[in-house]
Image (cartoon, rainbow, N blue to C red; front, side, top):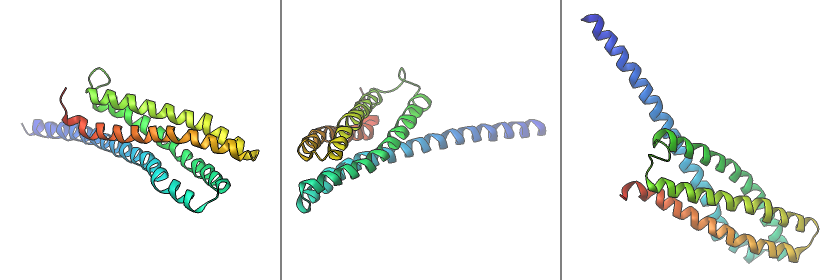
Length: 178
């Protein structure tokens, strides 16, 4: 009986460690995911609500364009890292916490779709519009660079809207039954 008690105790402790490690990994993934999403969406919000109006208030058009180029360069470098974190932690949670696409709730499918649209919009911003903005500024074509920056704004606005929507879905989704 004594041997059985210790064997059972050791087995239970081992199971406890496995469950605890899995819980820690889930919490780490969830925390990193939330932080990465907050930084990406918050950065877009800051650009719209603070940087853009301030730049228009105190800078001439040429300086504004160079400010946006530098700001986007720094921000987009961060966004690449944030997207990587979001994809890794999002798919980790989807498959290890929620049982994959077949077993997950509809709100997770919606978050997945919105997230991929946001990534696609960022790819368009980075590879098409931002690249064009940089090339135009290198050749000092200020008028065309300004037109390109104007084309970037609605894409950034769409990603801000989608970011706010995906946040609402992520927060409210678990409490909505379908």
